[in-house]
Image (cartoon, rainbow, N blue to C red):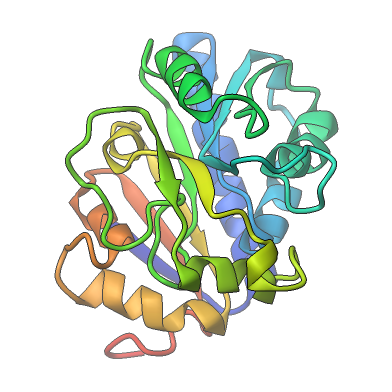
Length: 245
């Protein structure tokens, strides 16, 4: 695993976006297609903006999956991750091959159906973030490091729900759905490459726990340290508590 500390969030987004674009182009050149997993959330704004502005990516050859979605939240809600990806990635690039998690359907059926599609072939590159509680996707601590299922239906903890309020997606924690469909930890680790985009001071404690503490379900994103081809992009604020910074 590589850790790269960039001066500010805007520059981080641009550099990580270039890295991601190169990985997508390489997969298309080698395989004819690129299978991609995309994260959502406020921390990904600059990254996705930079990525979608890059030239010479044949988005018609990109197959898109996403990490998670709330159970029971309509696609019209501002916090819907389907809405987020449609507006910030799919409609901007013209991606036609996408597998969106319908949180308004039967969550177990959706998890099984999309998980079957996901598991058919390797994922070339996964874009992820790290939550304020250290979560990876919606795998809150203590995360399940053992399940082989591609997607799970999970309960969201209080810290996770407060983060969504803090980012402005909901007015209060009680408004955040209690459950979500989340890609499993092991499925994320099956990706051939992982690019984690983690800016902002509010992530500093989680970054320190995940990068300098034990690899543990109590710090779910710490598992990224076990991946042979993972790069974590931090800005000076999210890296502020790391030793030697």
